[in-house]
Amino acid sequence: MKIFLERNNCIFLILFISFFFTGCTKEHEKKEYVASVNDKILTQEELNNMMLAPGNKNFYKNEIIRNWINKELLYQEATKEGITSDSSYVSLLNNSKKELAVTLLLKKIYSEEKEKINNKEVEDFYNNNKENFKSFYETYVINLIEFNNENKAIRFRTTLLETDWTRATNAFKGDTSILRLDTNSLNYEYELQPASLSRIVKELNPNEVSIIFSNENNDYSVVQLVKKFPQGSLLSLEYVRDDVEKRLIANRKNELIKNYIQELYSKNEIEVKNQE
Image (cartoon, rainbow, N blue to C red; front, side):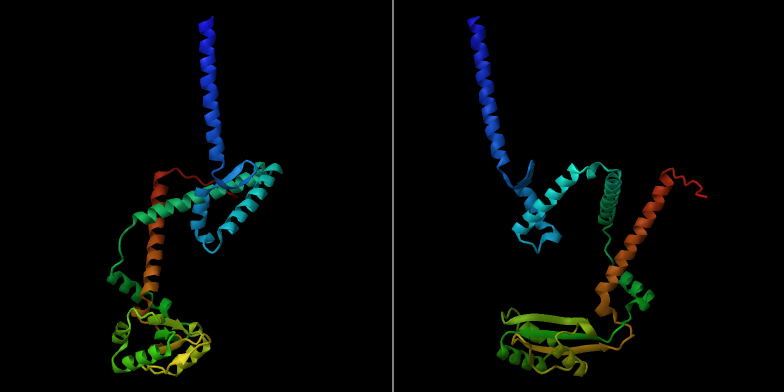
C-alpha cells in the first residue's frame, strides 16, 4: 500500500510539473503576438506577411494593425449576428473559393509556359496589328536629363552639343547631381509635364537640344527631341516594343487557356439541359 501511494505521488508530481511547464509554455506562446481581439490573435509572422502585401506597402505598421483589429471586430460581430451561417454568405464564400482556386490554377499554367518571345514573333504581331499601335494624340520621343546643379547642367548641354546623347550621358555617368534621366522616352502630349517642358518640346525640331530650363524646385533640365509622331500616325516598333510584347503575351495566355479548357471538355462529362 505504501509503495502504491508513493508511486501515485510520483505520478501526481510528474503530471503537476508537466502541466506547470506546459502552462508556462502556453503562456509564453500566448505573449508572442502583436494584437488580439478576444481569443483571436495577430502573430508577428502574420503581421510581417501583411506588411509585404502589395496593398499595404503605403501603410505604417500601426495602421495595418488597426485595420486588422477593425476587421476582426466586425467579423466577430457578424458571426454573433449569424451572418456567417446565412445561406447567402455560404453561397458567396463558395463562389469566392472557386474563383480563387481558378486564379491559382491559371497562374500555375502560365508559369509553366516559359517560352521566350523572339524578335520575329514581336515583329509579326506588330505588322499584323498596326491599327492598335497608332497614336490617338501627338506623341513625342525625347531624351531628358535633370540636375540639381546649374553648372552641371551647363556642362552637360555643352558636351551634348559637341557629341551625342549616348556619349554625353556616359561622360556624366554616376554623377550624384543627376535627378532624372530618360532616354528615348515615348510621351503622349498630355504626359509632358510640367507645362514648361511641354511648351519647349513642342518648339523643338527632331534632334534639336533645348536651352537649360528650371522648374519650381530650382532643378535644371535639358531636353532633346528625338522624334515626333502626329496624331493618328503609326508609332515605330522601336518605341512601342514593350507594349507589343505585353499584348503578344496576353494573346498567348488567352490562347493557352482556351486550348486548356477545350482539352478539359474532352476529358469530362458535361450536360446542359434545355432551359425552355
